[in-house]
Length: 524
Image 1 (cartoon, rainbow, N blue to C red):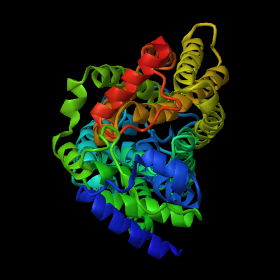
Image 2: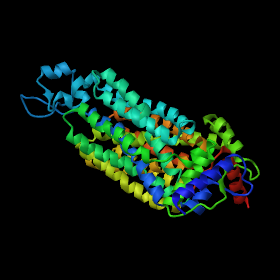
Image 3: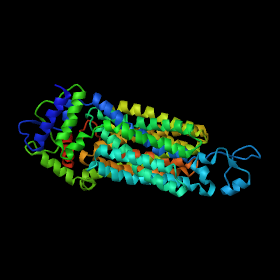
Image 4: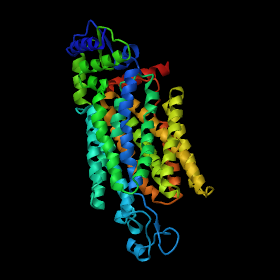
């Protein structure tokens, strides 16, 4: 049977299921349909995963561009040799004493607007406000992508906004306009990874979801490394750098997203069983498999005798972030996830931005940090289905916390040793960041997954807001803060449940039923 005829039959089956006429067919959940019929991770999922996850490269560029655009170029004195010492006095004093920028004033925002000495706080301010925008946007687009906008629609909107605001940023006439545009960029940039992660992983079967999810951050780290190379090529103009890092969002919007499918899980909880079945049949056909006649889809809290359409419509109308807070199970999970992700982001972004305090080559340090992350992703991908999400999250957070504490202690006085400890610290926290995306997505059902993860992403951005402020504390103290944060985060993970080999629940009631069944089995 051809893939086209298979899809047409599935649409007819989906429409019958939507009318409640399912008594003669077999009703299965999406996890069951993937595992038993369509394939958990075949050619379709691989292609879809790569296309969608490529959006993480865009988030890396829009986020980390501040490291290079807001860098402080070296200053020198034509009358002698050396750098501008401690940068005493305002810019006018520097000019009066003969100090000038080694590079042109257009090389960075710091050079163009004189953000040194008494104005240096403005660099941390614009970086912090960018993450404020990310925090607000994550909540907004997390909710919208759970409701009428959808996962794919949310990704389309944020990519378009990223390109527009990024290009406008390159034309900012002064610091305050630049700051406002960075906040607007954050509104959309902070949601790219959220929308992309959920859209990429929801069509994957339960036994392959952990390893696939752990591969997501390769794209973010790769994007950071690419950015360092691009920034080195365009180091003479921060404005041109913003143009070059914004155009890929437009390219992704027109050349990649048209070939991406909406999540079948989102279709199902929105009461569109026919569309969900159509996507599953596309998956099966591409994977060389077939969904048998008579198969229809159900939500995980559906009774076999209850019409599916009525239940789906009820979920689509009533589910929201408020439901996460009403149900005790998800409320506890949300609070813990918020705290854990906050301290994780504080350490991760803090170590990334702290390269300015290491007195080493900026471009080499950024690439070294990005490269240090990739072995972490490989290691955790190999171990996630052997040891589980919870033990790995604890171990990686504590590893990062311990080495950051060592870097901030008095026993480490060498800048090279401090850099080495920082690399190990970012190795551990990058692994944790990736693990937490997989972990938290499995803690919440489909109907509120993006809303809950949007709230968690807001906490992540709060940690990112604090990171540049901590970096201002000097050479040693930031490491002490990052060390303590990593240790606290690792201890908090002890209170989360393990989710390995658990299904992607569709509804709040389905999650509660699954939890009750798990507890009953443990008691027995």
